[in-house]
Length: 247
Image 1 (cartoon, helix red, strand yellow):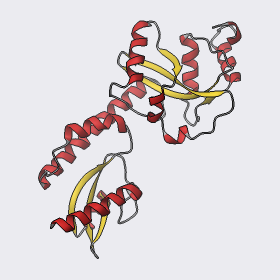
Image 2 (tube, helix red, strand yellow; image 1 turned 60 degrees about the vertical axis):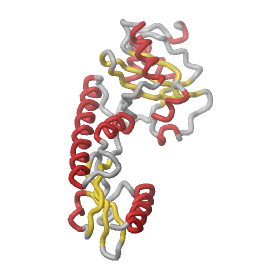
Image 3 (cartoon, helix red, strand yellow; image 1 turned 180 degrees about the vertical axis):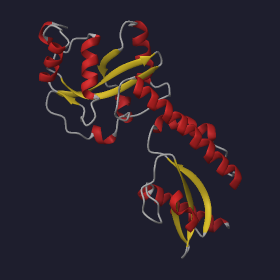
Image 4 (cartoon, helix red, strand yellow; image 1 turned 90 degrees about the horizontal axis):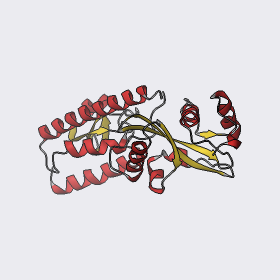
């Protein structure tokens, strides 16, 4: 492949990844998380992104990669560790892809184990292993509150980027705001959940109450909102005095 052909391939592949990079360009099947992908040419000199399902239908295979749609933040470190350089040979590229998929599989397994031990059945909003501001703040807070397993706090400005775009597009009612619930499964391993809080609800800062709200918010199928009435019901269920009597 000469320089002009490579530029054409890279230009067309960039368009594909931007507009239709989540499906096989040959059969239209949705790509699965951590599945191998292949970039190449089919008849008519057409550039396509293929899944494993149709790799055999490529006339010319030019590149290989991995489709990822979960644990994006945490996966970045795996990608950095597996990267073999911009001019890797075909064998080096395939080896890198294999190492990357193994790393992502291990990360997914660890995430699933954390969610299971944390009693959460739905998929995590995001997995973060970088030292971002909210992680540092949560770690310090739980260090200073050794008897607590749950925390309720404001959402940090930079944290909104780690919440799913669909959730952040939800139109919230008046006198509500997004806040963050945190469950520490063990030191250094925590699960966050966003919920839409009624700012007129006086929620007691006690572990049992935050625990109960966390469980409700993380119930599969919920969209993240919790009403003042639900808070009052939880207070009664956990035998906590009325929320209007506690700080």
